[in-house]
Image (tube, rainbow, N blue to C red; front, side):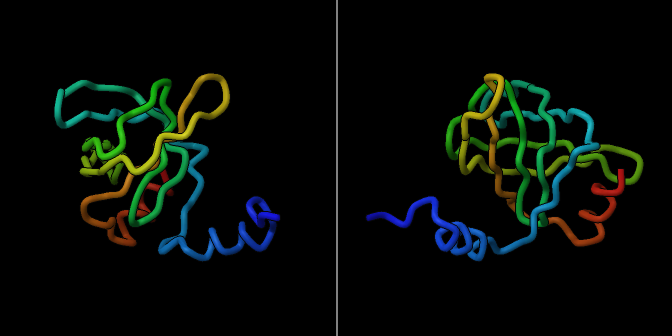
Length: 116
């Protein structure tokens, strides 16, 4: 019998996360630029941590794809390079795109973005 989906398994999965993720319910849509093709998409920021971002898009993105994500800083958007690590189908035909930043956000930067 498998333990997949059990509370113990869920706890193990959560404990593997290196950085706390924060939900971003108030974040407006942000621009996402695919590095390879310069295609632009708009995505909602689902969650954010110092190491990465979860985006909601109406299409999947290829694993390993590089993209720039505009995050609203103090007064101007700040672009962060990120790599797609998963594209999970979600509700209403949307996808949760998990991305890992090339360089972690500073705690001050994270705090500023979350306060917007």
